[in-house]
Amino acid sequence: MAELEAMIDYAKDSAALEQVRIKAVGKKGILTEYFSTLKSLPEEEKKTFAKSLNALRKSFEEHFSTKQKELEAQELESTLSAQRVDVSLFNLRSKQSIGHPVNYTKDKIIEYFTRMGYELCEGPLVEDDFHNFTALNLPEYHPARDMHDTFYFHDNKLLRTHTSPVQIRTMLAQKPPIKMICLGETFRRDYDLTHSPMFHQVEGLVVDRAGAVNFAHLKYILESFLRYMFGDVKVRFRSSFFPFTEPSAEVDISCVFCQGNGCRVCSHTGWLEVLGCGMVDDNVFRAVGYEDVSGYAFGMGVERLCMLSLGIGDLRSFFETDLRLLEQF
Ligand code: DAH
Image (cartoon, rainbow, N blue to C red; front, side, top):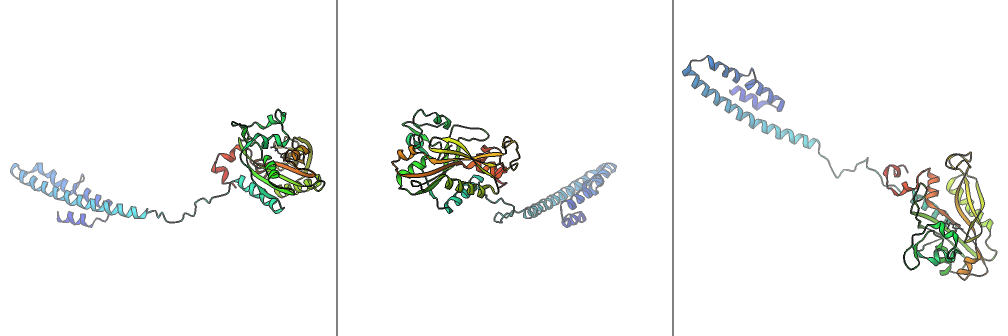
């Protein structure tokens, strides 16, 4: 028995302790074998021998379970310290925060125009009918109002459908010469692959004395802006109509996906429409009380520029905060 207890004391881990248990009370264990000799003993010896065997087993079991608890505690302690997490440690694999592609495009646009001497102006998101439509030569019942899919409130208030009303606010608040851009949220009731109810536009306006600003200036600034945004692309001005400009043009760049050869994105035309522009219509100048001036204006969608410069197919994905998309930039 002293030998068994010594073996228990020397057991270094649960596995070694289990070997001792097998040696003592396993199928062929020492104590088991003593118990099996019981039946061959004469009746009177059997009782006393059984009594002392039971005492031995009890003492073994007590000794064993004390040691077992001790080893279990030790082993738990060592696994815990091996797996300890130092929460103060900097995780090198943690993700770095990154800019949203729309913000990246916004910053790039602002950088270009502010370097060219344009002042960055702002206007309210909740506009009124006068600034958003009437003063921009879109009187009540003008058919072009339909294209704007406007969100209306009471009292002629609405969510601005474009950034053009900031032209009106700037002209009313300042005197020419004016050279400004505005970049901000705009809203329309539209939702598909290339439209979302909230999107961003850039508006540009330059006003100076009569004859001081002409279409060539407009062409120069937009061509160099588009090359700054898209690299070596062809730029073409296509005659168009906007109520607030006359003459008006839409501007296309050669398709950035197929280099103008024709693909699905450019509907096999080789061209992508990127903005609208023109010389400010006299009716707009009249609405803000300007006389003897000339000016040009332009407007474009930030998400559209961003989709084209980064090759993103679905505009709605900008606003779904899906990290799988955002992490690519
Ligand atoms: N406001 C126009 C729109 O939302 C964009 C635009 C076109 C603005 C031509 C302009 C412009 O200033 O001259 O579609």
